[in-house]
Amino acid sequence: MRSLPLLIAMVAVLFGLTSTGCGPVRDAVRPSMDIDYDDQRLIDGLRQVRDTGTSAFLREFTSWEWDEVHLFNEHTERDFIEDTVGAPVIKDRFYGSKASLLVFERDGEPVKAAGISGDFLRGKDHRVSFPADATVQGWGGGFVLLAAP
Image (cartoon, rainbow, N blue to C red; front, side, top):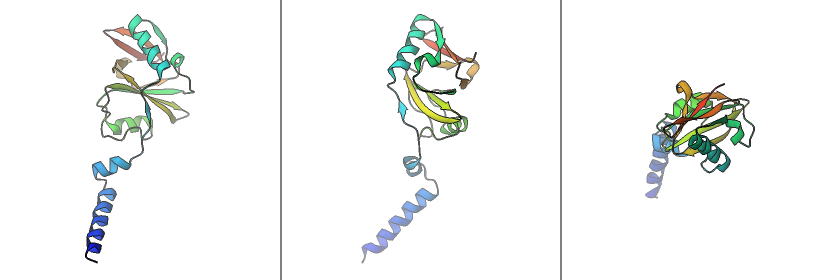
């Protein structure tokens, strides 16, 4: 019976941490998207554009239906990503990967998140959201520029 008060105290502390939004506990149970870091068609297409300095429509390198894409880079705040996408994408407070993050949407709903290693994608004029006819252009210096038409 002496362990019952201890058990009650532990449950109360755990409940308090989860209900008040304590960082590590809240982040562990927070919803997020699976990020695909191995979409070879997308990665190879973007690297070809980067290495040759050419341009292409981003949709040429995707195999799923989408009508909008958002671009985020390392250290982007989770709240900014969620405000932009309108749904949870990452668990951590900041996007910590050294990969560029592309979140594709269809009809306002996220359908795929893809990580592009090397963090070489940049949005033209610091833009983060682009329509389905967005282009990617070799930009020099090892970068690729994502631009709206």
